[in-house]
View 1 (cartoon, rainbow over the protein chains, first blue to last red):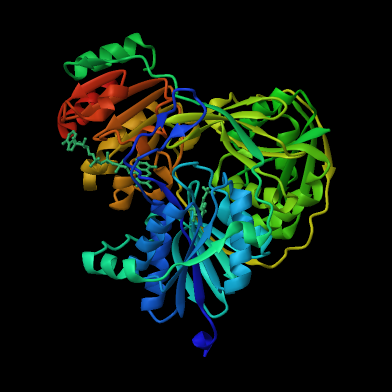
View 2 (cartoon, protein in one colour):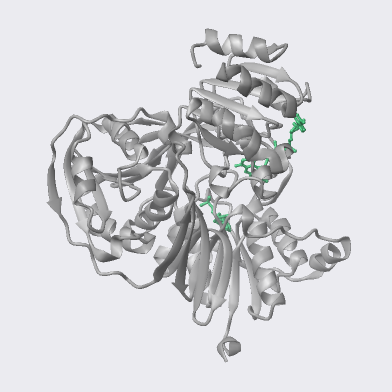
Length: 254
Length: 309
Ligand SMILES: Cc1cc2nc3c(=O)[nH]c(=O)nc-3n(C[C@H](O)[C@H](O)[C@H](O)COP(=O)(O)OP(=O)(O)OC[C@H]3O[C@@H](n4cnc5c(N)ncnc54)[C@H](O)[C@@H]3O)c2cc1C
Ligand SMILES: Nc1ncnc2c1ncn2[C@@H]1O[C@H](COP(=O)(O)O)[C@@H](O)[C@H]1O
């Protein structure tokens, strides 16, 4: 039987500013001000947890482990993963300024410890909008990668991934262990009910200090400043279609 | 030291975004080399060699590059990359898959989606759905960068660069290409179209029926919100926004679109924005040059008819 051996799934989840919030730039322009701002699980990572839990519910995955790297308050995002159905969670704790290469190196250490067959990440964190970590992790562990997944299917010792790419979709098969990054259409995450959240609060969190792993995660990019983008010049309301057409004609775009 | 650009093509032509990357590379004032991968792709290497500003084309022609896999292209770039100061490409699905892999293997950071470059190593890039612009400086010896294509003009033809064959390493066999399903259409590519007609979920089953004639009138491309795609009214590859395609056409129609910041992130650099929405308080109107408060089911056919006269 194919599923007799370990089919552990590791999911990487990031604690980010809630997607509904428009962040403000600090007065001195040094960074974004996120003090006291509502935070939660990165939406793509919520999709990743959902997919892992569904694999377990279908009897394909044997265990779902969620990991986050960050400050102590990232625990909230791990609790979210537990409430959705993750079996275990790991916090790699650090107050350091994290960038994808450093995160990928720490995740590699977790992969070596946990030995998962499948690793699922989000395609992009909605705070830094970088979209790098999954591919970097795949490179560091010499695994295949299925980016922007909209459908995944485990088939023996491979996983088939349908990817959302420019101009349509494609399908690749990856040898397991492999790395998958989620796109929006992979699934619709379940709604968490209060009892599940209460249960999640009682579960233990495995805490590793990043510093104890002896990995160089010093940032390679230095943020020099942040700024608001230039606002568009205000527009006008037109009364009807004829007036719209007239304005477009004057703007010479017809 | 030179700059290496990873070219992208559709099997027939080099993509416009590669030409935009060539323009972006101008920031360094260093020789620009372009890597073309493919199978039976001599024509494409030739096309790349004609782009003004290109000093040399590296041509990796191999059977396994007929459908280039990220793992294999990354291995090739790592083999070549150590000799370069910058490895550059546009922020497309292909390069987003390949370049982070290259950066990790070279043990350097990567700069994604740069909208401006100050040589040798300072970049401006949008964060938080384009609500903030971050200026970053890299300390790495090799810079791995993707650029936001719409922020740079496309380099025209005007060179006759030398084409050199390079050997690709054999496929690592980590992944296998199975198939692809590309939308066939005679409309221009969304990311570089002069006019984009986008619709939201309220168009429902009438999405194509209402928007296609308007797009056709301009020879433009269709776009959609995430909500319209999620609901199955539009295909995934036309989602415009923070997590979809970024566009900056001369003329953008936002039809039945509320104007969520994730959508604005993908279109707010358009030159002229037209919004049609029946809710006068819809946020999209704050970003539109011309706003029409109307029922789109009446206004769009009326507009298409008026423009066809
Ligand atoms: C992680 C994440 C990533 C996302 N990425 C993207 C992205 O890349 N791109 C994107 O677009 N969204 C994205 N979203 C979703 C985004 O937040 C909004 O939900 C989405 O853009 C809304 O789409 P909509 O405007 O079609 O729908 P709604 O917000 O529901 O708006 C519908 C609009 O249609 C108008 N309307 C209804 N009927 C009519 C009528 N008859 N005539 C005229 N007007 C009418 C209404 O007044 C309303 O303004 C993302 C969300 C998340 C959480
Ligand atoms: N600090 C982190 N902890 C856990 N996972 C992370 C972290 N940062 C990024 N990731 C994962 O990597 C994905 C892509 O992030 P990024 O490359 O920053 O856009 C996210 O969706 C997460 O799955």
